[in-house]
Image (tube, rainbow over all chains, first blue to last red; front, top):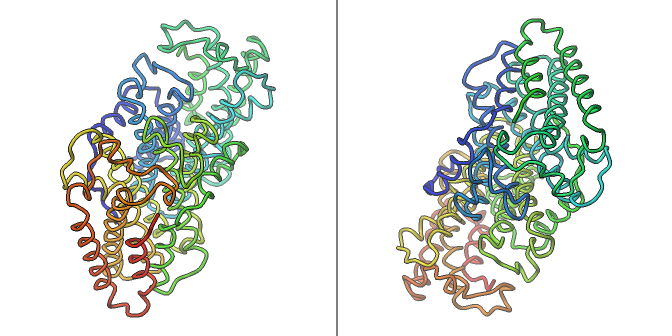
Length: 273
Length: 273
């Protein structure tokens, strides 16, 4: 109904800069591969993955702001507020977040309006105060003070876990998987989230700045306790191996079809950036 | 599906502070009164109005940030980044924007998932790059330079007009009005948007700081051209009168039932803050 009036060029450019500058596209790949596990691989899956990726990208733009994590570089390039300015970065993040809810409502996503609405509402919950945004708040609050293992696990389940969990369950729902299978994939997403964060913490400790394209050792510098710091490198590696094993067991009913998802789990653990 | 993990107390508090500190509630009132015009007045209308109000409130929080309009006061109280801090204000805005898309999807809003989805997508468009967020970008871009009347009208149709237009059309849709009536109400919303902005500009010129509870003459100070500045006070008042008259004509088919909406139009023009 309410058509758009005009799209300001600079805001559009900043949004494109924030989204099209690379990145692993882990979330849309998870949406696509979980949907594919249940036999769906058309454009609608890409639309849903794109909506999710916009949410992820908006969060990077806002997290990089001076008042938040104050990062000048992202993937080796100036962050949005550096390439443009702070006001543009705030608005670009806002507009990307908003655009996600336009795209997830697209008729191509699923023929059932009920399912599209469920995907939209659940995206809001995964991204909101009880998910990603709340996790970022917990992360900021806990700077420069000790964090318990439980606190770290909660904030990570929210900050990075919520969108990854959403990605895997959304893929299943897009392909009309059974509620049981959708729950199974949601647990797979949880595992991916845990593994992703543990691997990230390990990278933060181990990788050199060049390979990452961003400052490393940053968490330690900001006084943020990490699981690796609390558990030690060996115990972290052991937990990662256990997670990959759990993922494999979880996906075993799907046989060969689950190979791409198992490979994603392995990639996450072995990645170098 | 994806339940929330935890709601951080400080973020929740900042969100409540941003929303519950007063305000005219013009947008939800318009949703409620336009729905009421077509015979609907249950809780679902309040839900839709609340979703819209959250979008409005998030935009105030972000617009007040130092990198944007840099306002310390809002409705006579410290702005969110002053009462809390900048990071919390950014996240509170993000979380309010996100929560709106959770609430608009609530089953109470309308029994038809199709209609809820339409309302959700249109809300995204009214709030996004082609609507409110884009309008704020145009407003920031045009500081300290001359603006034409056409430019000002475009940015105002986006920055404040889009949500008011949405409010009136959404109310009609919520109450299953005919497409023709929904379009009529959308035009009414456009008129309200124009009148609101012109009245705001007049207030900015005329009102004293105390009555407004915020700094006045701010547009002139920021070097922003306004329609009042270009057209003059008398021509602005004449346009306002014409708009009220057009609103009355537009609503005349609804007879006495349109009295509340006509009174809202008059209130907007005569308001002192």
